[in-house]
Image 1 (tube, rainbow, N blue to C red):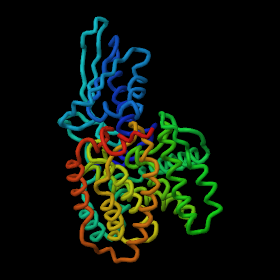
Image 2: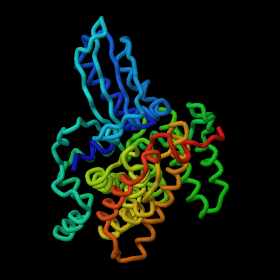
Image 3: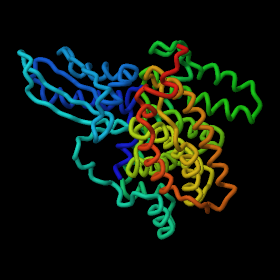
Image 4: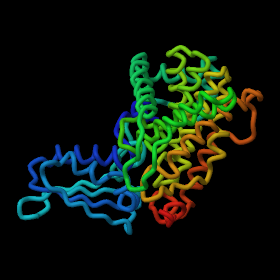
Length: 397
């Protein structure tokens, strides 16, 4: 598994796979072929089908400025390696091709070439079963494995991540108006947050979790700075759960960082053994994984054992199986924003549920990941971020 630095990334929304990674790819190619007179970029599959709504074109053209860029969309072609394919071409003054680069946005802001080996592993355990065996053998909590493999400086990085998450919440809670993109969708976080204080204690929990999740997700939809957790489309789930529990139970900052570490292990296991890309496996890989990460983090904060933490993650992902990725107009707004809020509430429910058990259950988390991967591949492509099916074809705009 890769470092948590590869899972938690700070960048501009609305999409880690459609915005962050293409921008990074364009910047790398511009540096590699900087002497070109102009550029041509061909987008394939999901990137072509929903790129305009995800601001992919803007993300790609910015690094090449002031040189011209022609972007070709081929939603009818899906490369075998991954649905999010990009072909970059550098052109001379006569329009002849100088050099090319084909690369893929594989989810969470990461880039990969076909046949390219993944980065060196930071961890020698890549399954939850293995992690639980490690905790049994050593007597240590899950978060200690992150410290052991990544060193003390990981806490400084996670401190930066935690601050970026809270900053996104604060900006989102203060912002009002309509989100860009043409749906004329109004921001709700500020109003929900203010109304929460007029509710009873039980309903306040729903209100606060919702407000925090909406705040981050709306910031993402507006192209603001967010943290991939594990993606931009699912960036509101984990921050809202951590913020709510920290305020309710007065957890020390160090406890929140440890919860982030454990959540990162959960996300990394899914990323390694399945996918966190909506274009590859549907939204079960994005919001489903985020829900599992948040459930594990919450369970740890609430005093759960490693086996109970695994159970919380398993419940969260199990009940997201089959979740489609079908955003209306290719925008990370409907159903994405409210889906983050629903997943945040479900994550805390899962954490509290496992505290009523001893952590023993029938289906292990690793099997759920395997099932999610197969389910995602079995989903028709129109339900995997292509704007060709589901809510994406809703005609009431």
